[in-house]
Length: 249
Ligand code: G
Ligand code: G
Ligand code: MN
Ligand code: NA
Image (cartoon, rainbow, N blue to C red; front, side):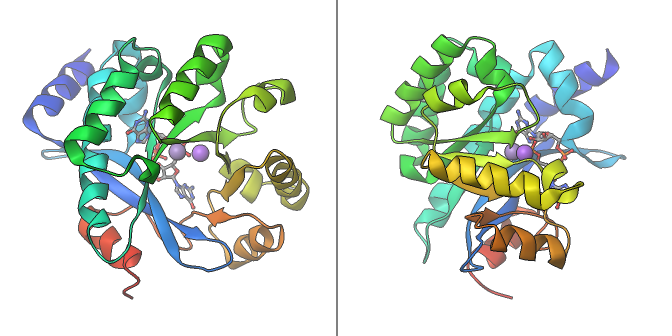
């Protein structure tokens, strides 16, 4: 596949880059973290969004070296910000293939060690499907990751097939409400139910995909802890994200 070949080359030649989307406290309105999102800067073609190449990376297995590269880069960036005026929590997406690598724990440990990042500032985002492939093994690994001090979020929550009993047994810290619930029909019922569930389990909850003032009002009034979305900030290069994260206009 041509795209696969080009992506492999891009990884080697440094055409990949990471953008950062700030995450805000719902009550404070202050940015306290960001999500790392990979981009591919193709010569002649501009920035390619991950939706167009992550599936290829997943299928070919390239997601493993690509994901390791994003993790290391995001940790390096967060460690740089950590020494400034305010620490920034860094969320990194982890795909199933990465999570199933026998040395995934080592990869995370190494990324923390080489960057010097405080492990409590790293949040790994996993989807329900990652966990469901092999729940017992996943729970063991999640516990090991937490022992490193890293925090864990369940991404796109509500769109997969996880059961309440699985949720009960997962050692995680945060649920991220998928944007389809924030933006869709009966948002107040869906978001309200997920927030109640999260808080009953002692989890933080972040609403994604907030694009309008009405959606922001809704997720604030329903007691979401964190908010993310184009209304507040788009994913942007580190230099721009840094300005938002440090509270500059
Ligand atoms: O930006 P866009 O909406 O096209 O992103 C599509 C998907 O790509 C999202 O589900 C997002 O989680 C995923 N994605 C973005 N960056 C990374 C990454 O570094 N690793 C993995 N595994 N997925 C990513
Ligand atoms: O699957 P995941 O939740 O990691 O996907 C994150 C993706 O969602 C990113 O690629 C990011 O660009 C996109 N995103 C972030 N905020 C918004 C938003 O407000 N609206 C839409 N449509 N997409 C968003
Ligand atoms: Mn995510
Ligand atoms: Na999500």
